Amino acid sequence: MPYASPLGPTLETERLILRPPVAEDFDGFCAFHADENAMTYLGGVLPPPVVWRNMRSMAGAWALDGFSMFSVIEKTSGDWIGRIGPLFPKDWPGREVGWGLLSRYWGKGYAREAAIASMDFVFDTLGWEDVIHSIDARNDGSAAVARSLGSYLMREARLPPPFESHVVDIWGQTRGEWRVNRTRLIGQLKRPEKRG
Image (cartoon, rainbow, N blue to C red):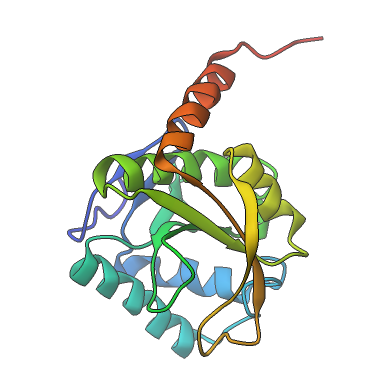
């Protein structure tokens, strides 16, 4: 397993490894924050010094709070492909599971696959009662991921400083709703692919 982290658990899905960030992930974080497509609805591209601080804040949240976003590693290549998982910054509109992948990994179902593992983690391990996803209203791709998880549009919210100019759609669901949705997702994942 590439670069195990001492900060928290490692989750494994069929195609992905999710673990807290480690120093060796910095190049991946820089590539992600320089990816104009990936950053379109996430505040725009960032230079490496800012990325360094953001990545260290994420690692610090793991150390102080026991959770934050996971680095997502593609099993077959060992490549860092994005960050997905729980976050709850001060004055945020709710406890969130968020996602962001390098744009070259879009369209493969990776965001949904990692988000399912993250949803299980926040409800089963962290004991959260509900979860949100704060999504720019123009971000149809992220809204589709939220919808595929069984989340629904709840309201609009303004993010706290320094993001107060951003109004986002708040998607979400409760732990009880996730139990129902998770059962449905397991059924979908086990169905054989249609051929021909």
